[in-house]
Structures are given as C-alpha cells and as structure tokens.
Image 1 (cartoon, rainbow, N blue to C red):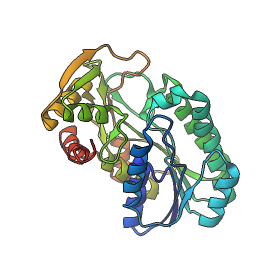
Image 2: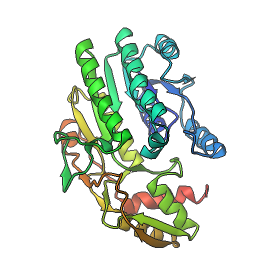
Image 3: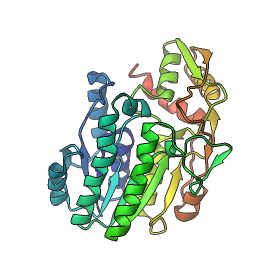
Image 4: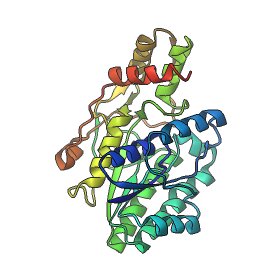
Length: 315
C-alpha cells in the first residue's frame, strides 16, 4: 500500500515508517521538523538526522498540517491508501506552555488531514491519541470506560478522537483510534520522564520523583510501533479504539530505582505528585491482543537497559 505518516521524522513516527518499509509498503512522510520551542536546536537536528538515516523513502515533505494548501499538495502527490497521523507534541507541558498553538495543531491540523483524506479517497485513517484522555483511574484502564481528561493536552486528544470518529463516519472512511502510554526508548528527546531519570542517573545527579506511588504503563517504543502497524494493517480493527501499551503499570519510584541500577549512579529525591497530572496505572491491551495479536513484550528492566546503552553515546 501507499501510506502517509504525519510526524514521520518524530520519535514514534519514524519507527512506524521504518517498520512499514520493511513490510514492503511505499511510505510518504510529512513533518514540520519543529523543536517545539523547548528542545535545543542541536539536539533536535541530531535526532532528526539519526531518525531519517533509518528510512529508505525520499518522499519526505517539510510541511505544517495547519496549512491545508500544503497538505493538499502532499496528498495529491502521494495519493495514499492509508494515513497514520502521528504528528503531535512530545508531552503535555508543551501544549500547556502554548495552548493556542496546541489547539491549532491538535484540532485544525487534524481536520485538514481528515478533509484531505476524504477528498483523495483514502481507505483508512489511523489516529494516534493518548492515554492522557482517561484522566484519573484506578486499577486497570479499559477502552470503553468513561474518559475524563485533566489538562489541555488530554482534552484536545479526546476531542480529536471525536472529530476523527464523526468525520470518518460521515465520509464513509475507515478509521482506527490508538492510545499509547508513556512511550520511551532510543532516539527520544531528553525532556520526558524516562529520559530525565536515565540522564540524571548517567550523570550521577538527583532524580526527582513526583509521587513515589504514582503509576505509569511504560511502553517501549518498539512495542508501540509494532502495535500501530498491526492496527493499521488489520481488518478487525475497523472503527475501534485500542490501548497500545505494555499492559503493566509500574511506579515512578520503581522506574527511578531501575534507572539507578542500570546506570550505576544517581540518587532519588521524593516530591509530591503533580496535581495537574492524572493518576494512571495499567492500561489493558487485551482488545488489541484479541483483534490483531498485539501484546506488549518489553518490561522496563530490559527497555531501560537498551535505552541506557543508546543514551551513553549522547549524554
């Protein structure tokens, strides 16, 4: 198939492109190559270069999804059968810092892609949402439970799910909605929780843990990529929503302790949980397992070790 991946130079997106190429698909990429206003220019340039070096495609378009004219030109050239929409922000705080831009990307940008998908008769639209849509929950999170997001990012991601569902159903366009959680691994930016923990441990610095018992379903990037590609290729996933996660909540304190064990340095400072951030835990991936054989494979002990080995070369 011809597949268009938005955010295809991003952390998750470039992995999706590489995986699709290995399966023999023809892949086009849209990315605006931004540093989100928070990532040092040299870091993001280095990451983009290393990510793109893994890809075979030369159909890489420097474009902003907020610009419908530019998006239309890409669709006209690529004529994709499937669109996988990964373009977003690396974490919620980037949207909090610039909510106007966040809203424009996560809503207007999405609408532009949906309009273009309808116009150029795309077969399937894959929307990458977020586990942040759930808000606070106890025990295990399932796809059909009520979503009560906290904060702009989660609210906008949930709105994106509704926009995708509504537009695709009216346009008779097949769609899938995917909710990853706490994705980490090589070629990620340094401004996320696992990156911060491991970098501090490598540098023998203090690791600040905001809420020792707070849980996250840490998902290794290769697991996330595999889940996205399987969902995109599956007939069984049509019109459904899935958690693409490890399926195993681990505490922030555990994560910090494992980072110290792996890197051989660092010390933990306990702090209060961030009240603006939802309390989450394990997200069931049973539905994805039943419908297209996805199961998270990589525990944080293994994933942190692999990520640490990559970080050693960059920190």
